[in-house]
Image (tube, rainbow, N blue to C red; front, side, top):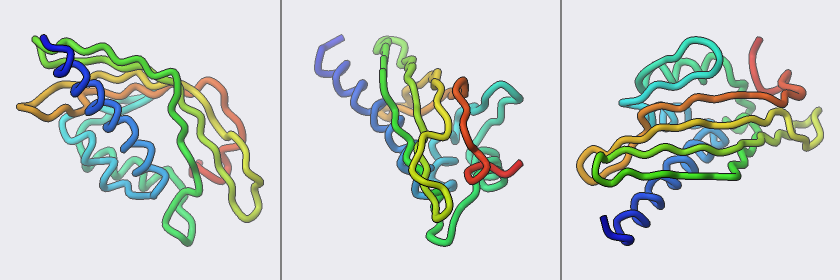
Length: 147
């Protein structure tokens, strides 16, 4: 395995993780779903699988405002990626903090936790295989999630 291949794989996986945050913050739940076309997604409850299920989950639970967004910023930190080039698999772990501001909610962190991710390579493309979300510091989610 060359250092260049490992570096390229790390960058591709970082891009998937960043795209997830960007697409959620844009309110583009279809694009989020596409990231999980061949993957499972979930938290402490049941896991779901595939694009349509992820898009439906987000559409049903996340509040979008007049601008089409949830008025959030997902900050992803403490990212560690481990790649097995020979097997075409990788793992990632990171922390997330979600900031939100609305007309009646001043800018504040509303939830923080971690992502535990698995990835697989199909041909030359990396993709999510699994995302497990753990929310362990929970603030005011009343303007972010439907009950």
